[in-house]
Image (cartoon, rainbow, N blue to C red; front, side, top):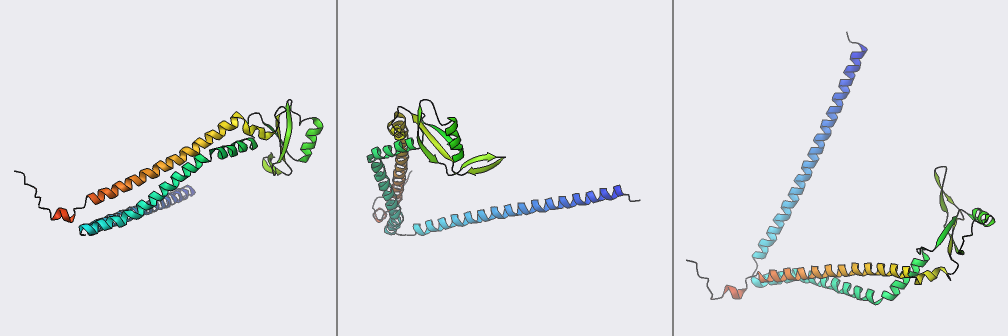
Length: 248
């Protein structure tokens, strides 16, 4: 007699068997795809290696003068391109060093404008209503500081009931010590100079490293060209009267 329990058990086995079948199919498909990918990669590699062997065979069949011409045709555009790149990088390094003063002044000015000096204080206002309320309550006053600028934030992002909301008319109030003439006075501060010099040195080193890498690449290609030419047995060597003595 088949009971409900038996039917449920049989149903479970059927579903389990179907799941196992799907898993087997997926694994088989994955394995087949992997095998095809490996076979394709191996075929492509074999074709590349065969093409290289064919090129070498064609090169070996050339006369010495033809080999020299083939090497010149191969390396000349490469050397010219690398030489141009190296020359351009040399010019960039020289130009960057020549413009150090202007570059550092720009960085110092940005340092001051972006409020990076530790003496600068800021207060964010969420709209004009908030700003007016702070005026009434004296919340805008900071002992020993003066308000020098009010910058629009284009909508201060605040969390309201777990949701980000942009408050229109939001602004940032910028304060500096009362004995400092203006915000841009910090462009001439030791902190600004140190900041600018660090950035300049880092950028200069980056350009120098690129120049070194370019010079190394050019040197290696030139050496490879010289080695390729040196490996050619010239016609003069072929007709030379010199005969190697056999070892006894």
